[in-house]
Length: 330
Image 1 (cartoon, rainbow, N blue to C red):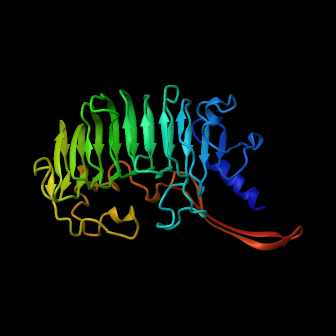
Image 2 (spheres, helix red, strand yellow):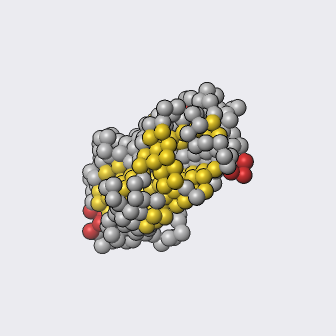
Image 3 (cartoon, rainbow, N blue to C red):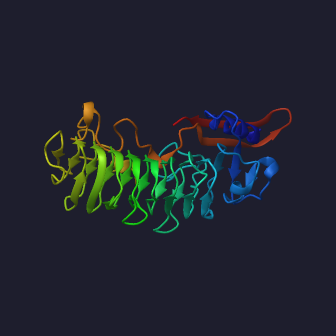
């Protein structure tokens, strides 16, 4: 009965605009069984003819690290999120899906990766080598590396590094960087240009960012330097006035700015009387939890999730097994 309930919920999880796209599971604790839609690693998905562009991949939580993956097919890759034991109502099985790196190559245009934890080494992260890739709600120790591409989205992530060119001469464009927490991450976009850089929190020592729109960001490092090149720079907050005081840009005190708890990412929510509340454009909140999108605690994917599962320890054919499931949508 438990298996039937979980299977039924899983089918509901991945309804998408591609209604005929298939759902595959990747779990390195299970033996591969294609008949049941199970793979042990991500790599075989590229060459398998039955895995079609637009299919959804559930990269399931595991205590074992997944092998790095070079993607050459349009896929939607969903992990369970991160910091799962720190925030309430995350996952009943609070284990992330950890991987060293994912590289999006030609053929993977339109792919989305979400809820995956890149935390194997300090360089763990994503390399984007083709157009139109979305990185959303991921934990990134090594950040996102961009080649000479056009069109990428890095949104609602927790990153300990930056979004940057693969080299100092890399030229990229139409990049949206929004509602992220960049913790201890310095930035230098060099020859690249973000189209939108909005509602982010920066705590690094140095920001050198080129962006068409630079709005509603917060810089919380008093000692940081900031060099922003933007035709539309407004409503940004800095704790030492690094963004100036024109066009709604403000200098604010770090004290009372953030909630400072109770979790690694929850501490960056705005405090009750934070000066960042309502300080963004059109009265929105500045920072990662405001604006057009919102940072989601633990990077939970926007699908129904089971956060509490209780199964009776006995049963029979007549009475079955008592199961209590609590689920929510993000």
